[in-house]
Image (cartoon, rainbow, N blue to C red; front, top):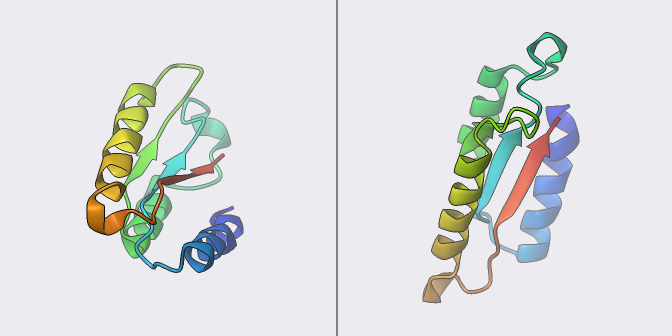
Length: 95
């Protein structure tokens, strides 16, 4: 699954022409632990490689949803600093 999102991130970097595009790697449906396809450690490792935050959420149980939106706002505010005007915030969601 993580291999599927790596090309997406690469395409975003190519389009933005900037290696440090603000993004958040999100593992979704954390409430379905028995059906997990990606380990937390794998998500954290990829997020560390990409230099971005990693969060696990569940819309169903409302786990970390508010925190995710707060982090998105933080990333957008950081990206909108004058020297960072050409970037935007991107969230990659792993299900």
